[in-house]
Length: 128
Image 1 (spheres, rainbow, N blue to C red):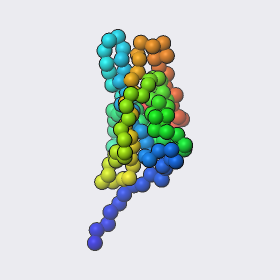
Image 2 (spheres, one colour; image 1 turned 45 degrees about the vertical axis):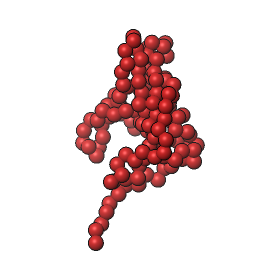
Image 3 (cartoon, rainbow, N blue to C red; image 1 turned 90 degrees about the vertical axis):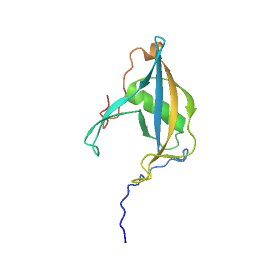
Image 4 (tube, one colour; image 1 turned 60 degrees about the horizontal axis):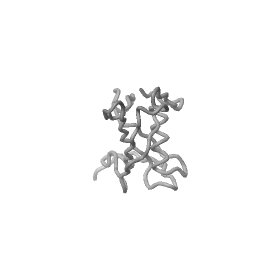
């Protein structure tokens, strides 16, 4: 017989069918469009990774609210939601049951609140 190992995240909120959110943030500044990405050290990879802002959904928090919160925490930017995936998107179904939804957010980089964004990281986060 074969033995399988898998990782399970025991956090699923009452308000969402997934545990996490990935934010596809598009910065509009000076007539140009850019993706907003973060750089984060990932222990399983043993390396720095370039990623979309992302995070877990808090208890009784919607996917949309979590997306805007994570974007603000990790990048300092404030935006507006323009689209969201539906259903469950598994992140690594061969290893875990971790799943998310993707939220597209437009960020007005010319707006005063986005001119000098300041991260609001949790004490355990090391994100650039």
